[in-house]
Length: 442
Image (tube, rainbow, N blue to C red):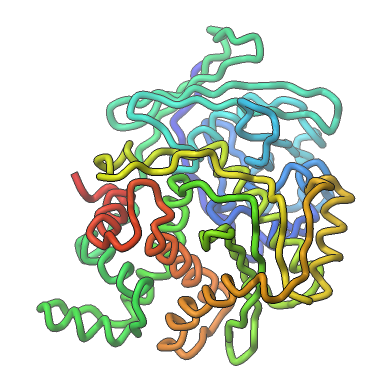
């Protein structure tokens, strides 16, 4: 069966997202930052929602009546929730499908949801792929004890992709073959300035202690009149995109974690940025939260465990996009389970760790150390971020702060040499990497 052309519908508005999260009984922190909540269709439209952990996925108990009312508002009947958190070799994603508006509370295996998912992963580059093709396997229906498995094959064609679905019998059924064409998104479409100028401004702002007006003057010296508010919009648009595209190329980290939080001012109110590094100083994860309590600490650990596990399964050598470096790079698979977690005396950490162990999200053998001097490494690492936030004199919204911090952190990773093929201090290769991640260098 051949399906229609892939169509990417609207990304849900904030009020629609809030209603959806209430209906699914999800928290904002459980969403994957790199996965916008969007309607995608190949003839049957689905709302795709990416979340951080399989545990959260299995615990979902949606309010079907709220989903039914939301379907009338969005004109979309299906809600497909998926996660990359998989402990089964060869399985990339786990999913659950809810469609109460058409009388299906939960579908065990949804064939017409996997083609939109394959297009979605390719569209947002959530899965590293070669020029020819890529494939992934998704499982569904575990909670209702009707587990099914679907393999999606995405073949590159001129001007787009062709996707096919394989059943669990590993045989393509002619009547269920699904094809679709996807045009790669140009993230710089409709921009007045050239892409290399945009990336230069974004990279300088995220790397050095500059204000937007400083960059405006620096561009003026080069004969370019770029308003500081335009540079601000570029940073808000491309900083999260840079973080998303860099993640699959990070080098290995070790299993000794150092976790701490620092203060970020948002509208004259102190927010809390949770951060983790390993014993070599490599950044593992970060999360901005409005509160400093056990719930925030738990959300951070869930995000850190999910992201490191996803990186382990999706690690992609940068040699696919850049020439090999002059010195060998570490290609060890990223460790997803910590051996020891070093924290300060904050009483919220033991409670959060205990809850994660009870739920099985964290192994029982993981040791928690509350020794303050062991965290000197991450305390010193906060200085780089503080130095960058100082010229801006704080942020004016939580979302603005979070998008900007994503860019600060990923440029900090580049500076430390955490990306495969880029050594610490190699500024030219860092600039080349950023350009090639956005496809503007041959």
